[in-house]
Length: 355
Ligand SMILES: [Zn+2]
View 1 (cartoon, rainbow, N blue to C red):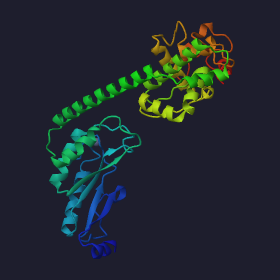
View 2: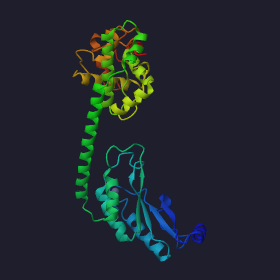
View 3: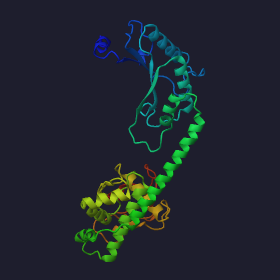
View 4: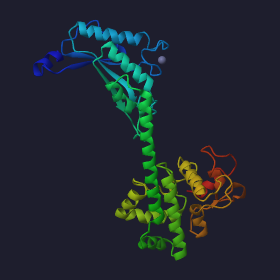
């Protein structure tokens, strides 16, 4: 009925009947009209093998035979030629990990063409922005254009493209690093910190600025993964910068290429899911100063400032568990994985501090 209406409204238009899951096979009870095509979507096929691969019991002979049957059935009914809807680019099917399928795609396109398929389409989905060019996306239109293209040569071209991308990323990262290192904090920002802790002199506030610079440096190195703010006094300076909205947006654009959202230091309690961002901060701050995160000889700047500057209610850390006292959070426990390193200092008493 739909096909009849469509034929009256637009005689040139076609309507697709999707053949999918339980409708993959040739229909028996309906005969397609001239303006109907079958859109065959082999969602349940195997992508580890080309359709034609005799070694694949899922694809062979069922799927190749179905394609031939569908092509023949729609042709004999005088209907529009068959179309195929593939899943080579489907991040949902492949759980966001797109396996390169050059051989499967090549042998499939060769088979589809030889079997008389009129059009080959592919569903493309993704829940993350792609960080590198996807081989399948690159190859699919080229193979549709020429199923006999040399996929190895295409692969080489793609590698070259990846190198260019890698160089571009490296250059961008250096620009961001240089911006952070040379950024001049506006003088009124340290004024806000001094309002909270009037005992801080100029030398102390210089250290707070150095601490924030270290935090920004490791946030850049974390490439989008969350980094906890381990210092109350540095957090105050960060917060002052954030409140200066236009300045902060300008800073973030040049330092990260995106907005770095505020994660209040107080939210990072070790028993929470926030523990991993804090561990990350520890590992990366240690790396920033060339310290071993499991046996740090000293505290990295970000972790020592609250203590050194005598910040009331500040966060106290010790570099090593074995020397930890009550009311301190020990660095070598932060250096362990999310399940901790065992031992009595791994949660318990330290949670009193980072609260
Ligand atoms: Zn297979």
